[in-house]
Amino acid sequence: MDTPYYFYDLGLLRRTLEAVRSEADAFNFRVHYALKANSNPKLLSIIRAYNLGADCVSGNEIARALEVGFAPPDIVFAGVGKTDAEIAYGLNHDIFCFNCESLQELEVIDAIAASLGKCANVALRINPNIDAETHHHITTGLNDNKFGIGIGDLGEACDLARRLTHIKMNAIHLHVGSQITNFSVFFDLCVCVNELQRFFEQQNIVLEHINLGGGLGVDYLEPDTHAIADFRGYFSLFDKALERRKNQQVHFELGRSIVAQCGSLMSRVLYVKKTQATEFVVIDAGMTELLRPALYQAVHLIENISRVGEANERKYNIVGPICESSDCFGKDVSLPKTERGDLIAIRSTGAYGETMASEYNLRSKAKAFYSPEP
Ligand code: LLP
Image 1 (spheres, rainbow, N blue to C red):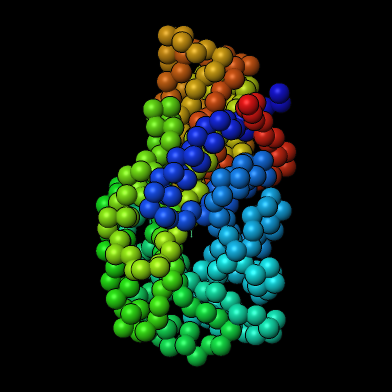
Image 2 (cartoon, protein in one colour; image 1 turned 180 degrees about the horizontal axis):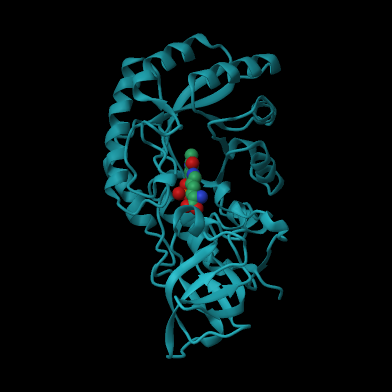
């Protein structure tokens, strides 16, 4: 197989989906898969078969979700900068809900819905000013983040929603960040939502749906020990801490925790290059295939598949071929003595790997291969 390529373990994906479904079903929670994590059609068809909804952030993601068989009533549309054409596309397909990020957007959705003779279901995305305690680039719920409507602006948002005749505002949406490993962040989110529920009741607005976003983190350092995220702990925390109202549906938008561990980026060693300062392993995958280390200093487990079990370990800097110094997958990585032609696996790359790839340096897109299905 030509390297670099993505390899997906579909058995692990299925086991993960079984776990998500059974743990969410236990509390009657509805899970929408966040397509931005991985929109590979083969994976999406499997995810769809487990009866998850779809969380989309562009018209093209909605189109992809529809193509692989997600039904419009199972599709939510989020994003701080939806274009008029994307809003019209969502309305024309009668999607379940628009997660609306500003007062201005409420007015635009209302106007477009009016022109199409439609009524849009809208969830107000609220920015709760909660620190997700994750990398600052993937923190979304703080006051200085661009996302959502601040708590101080909610009164005005409710007044506006009451005046607009082509939207139905019956839901709220919150997403405070990604790769969250400290569960107390989710507890704080519940405390905030409980207060918000009281606020909306005072406004005489009935919240039929509460969407709590995604964010559940995965174990990048020990992917084999924790191949499946702690869905039980995650959902049971929400079940305990959230004051649900009767007939209220609670939704989640999980991306990373569903697909991260089933993917590995496979690459060959081009050169082992010794300098005065260090020893580099130059592989044929770069930041064009996996941007996370360059963008977020993300750490992924790196393994030399050609030398499993060999003991003569050394420390290497693992770098790609791209003309950028940030094109580095790891410093001081311990690997058995590595040679040109060895096969390297960069683990836990099923989420935000393929979807964030680019053609920088006119690179070709990496192909995907899959474990055999039973
Ligand atoms: N809902 C909303 C509104 C989001 O913005 C996101 C992710 C999700 C759900 C899914 O979150 P998850 O369950 O995957 O944490 N590229 C970054 C992650 C960016 C996350 C963006 N929003 C990375 O590679 O770490």
